[in-house]
Amino acid sequence: MRGAVPVALLAFLLFGCGMNPPSPSAFKAQPEAFSTRGPSELSSRSTLMPTGTASPLPTATSTPPASMTPERPASPTRPPRPSVTPTAPRPTRTPGPSPTPAPTRTPAPSPTAVSNPSPPPPPPPPPRRVLANYFPWYDPGTWSTGCTSDADQPRDGVYSSDDPGVIARHIGQARAAGIDGLAVHWFAPGNRTDGNLEKILNLSPEGFYSTVTFLYHILPGANQPGVVDALRYLISRHTAHPRFLRVAGRPVIFFSDMYRVPDAAGNRPASDQDVATAVARWAEIRQAVDPDHHTWWIAEGLKPDYLAVFDGLYVYKIDHACCPTAYRGAPRWAGWVRDWERRTGQPKLWVGTVMPGWDDLNSAQPQCADLRVSSAPFARDRENGAYYARTWEAVLPTQPDLILIHSFNEWVEGSYIEPSVRFGDLYLQLTAQWAARYRGR
Image (cartoon, rainbow, N blue to C red; front, top):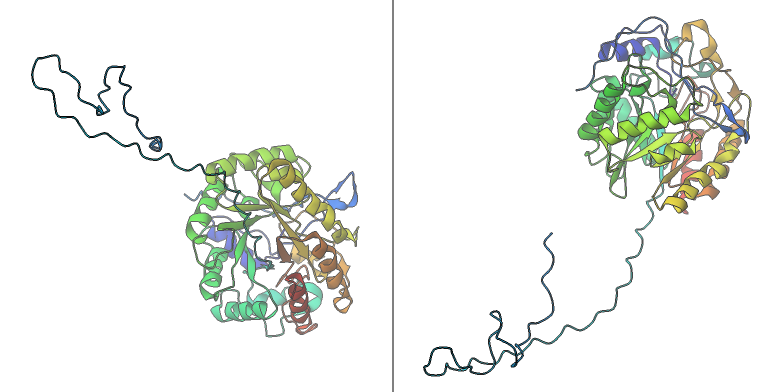
């Protein structure tokens, strides 16, 4: 799951949704199951339900154009038409003086034939934007849990995600690194992630456009009507903000953990391989919320079937304990999106993911139990930026519509580029270089 939610924070989140808190924890990702193509093709991840019982979540509550053909005078051998004035006097049925001749109507010249105009040129491609996953739920106590990556800490000191000064600092650091906006992980209406999303939008300057990664459907007690209500709230409340990310005029929303979507009773598909059930449920949600696709919905995972409902694909986690070169699958993943576009004529977005490294070994400790399904913790050596470079080199040739950095501040899974005690601002400097290369500068 996206990001680590420490104990106190998760309790705050779930109380805000009318739920009992799980045990102290942090969210993180699970390795995706393999397809028959090979170890680099991984399916969507799943997430562990917390221990304890949670209360159900509350639901959020033409007129055709006139003819261009001119009227003609009536033929002299036929009776006069009421709509046409005769061109010469005619005797009346009652004897009497002949009527005064009406002036001859001169037909208007026929319009000059116009050849069919050339079709309008296609719209320009969207600007090449770089986004970064952003986790808005940290407290000063987060780094004392022992669950964060390799005991590293923010260089600028531990912080509360609610602090506007911290948010402003992060936006400034991201902009300096060539990042155009944040993908804010968002849980539910009115809770902490919702309030911090609003702060991010309000504090963002012109040119910095953020969006959300939608997570409501993975919360304990969630059901399909609640998912619909949460999405309606999100769209009506936030997407009209001038700093909310848009592509070709339409707001963009990312989705995670696709298979965990519940039905009306809160039941979820049996596994991430039950794609047909998940797609059918998302189709019902899309029909209820956004049937005309006024927003871009971007699905996580390596299942092109989701493109029947969603408007694009991205991959959240591009490395796993089992397969250190999984990120090399980017050309194949991009090919699914482009092939769908060619076959259907429907525009789709391909979002390429890059990552500086990974280290979630500390999260295996008992006090770090969380909402994820157990997966093998592992560490991927950053190699002083060389690993980060390889993930960029895998993605750039696919010409992604957007690039997603995983992540700005994922401190439990160890994928952060935020300045740290261990790495300083090395990864912000590298990001600036790679973002410039992506834009062709």
